[in-house]
Structure formats: C-alpha cells, structure tokens
Length: 144
Image 1 (tube, rainbow, N blue to C red):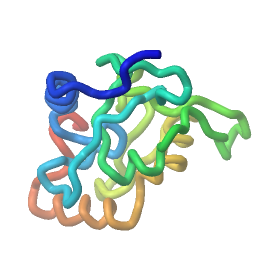
Image 2: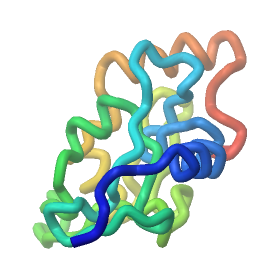
Image 3: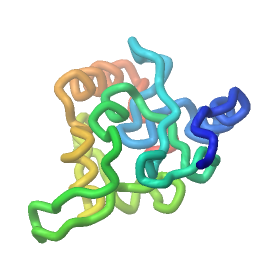
C-alpha cells in the first residue's frame, strides 16, 4: 500500500502548479475562508497513489463534493463518464465561463458531469465570482 500522507514539498508543488486556484472551480485560495486541500484525483480508496500526477489543489467545496467519486452519469447522453482529471486534461477543453463570468458551463460529457457532481456552481462560489469580477479579480489569469 502506498503512503497516503502528502508531504510539505508535494503540497507546495501542487499549490504552485495550480497558481493557488482550485483546479476544478477555479476559486482562488487568497479569497477563501477555508484552507484549500491537496486531494487525490484517483482516491486512495480506489488504488490512487500519493504522487504529484495524482494530486490536485481543491477548495473545500469541491473537495467535499468530490469525496471519492471518479465518475458520474451525464444527463445529456445518459452515459457514465469519468470526472475531469486535472493532470491529464485541459480545463478549457471541458469548461467555459458564461458571459457574466459567474457560472461554469460543462462543454463535454466530462465537463457536464464534473459541474454536476462537484457542484461547481454552488450559490456561495457563484456570488463570490460575481463580486470578484466586479472588482477585477476574476477570472484568474490562467482561465482566460
């Protein structure tokens, strides 16, 4: 069994790689009221490893909703598809922001399922996006 504890060096590398933004909803850690987590993309409970290519930075909302999920049912195609994998896929291939920059839209089955399963458009995060956009702090530069 692999070691499940994330090291300080891994935490630092993951946060830097993510530009201190949640790799799912793109919330910025500097505006969060709770510390972000280093999460296992493929959970330890499903044979995931504690290695940089399986770790992502996640806000508490996304981390809590993801829990140990790796897939979900797409309501459009009715197929079961895997959730977005930040190490293997590009965010902009699967997601876009609406014209007001408040809602994340799933562009693909992977995007749609991830939006729904992780509840990427939770009321609080949508309100935060609205306020941050109004003051020029959203979207984060890497989403553009």
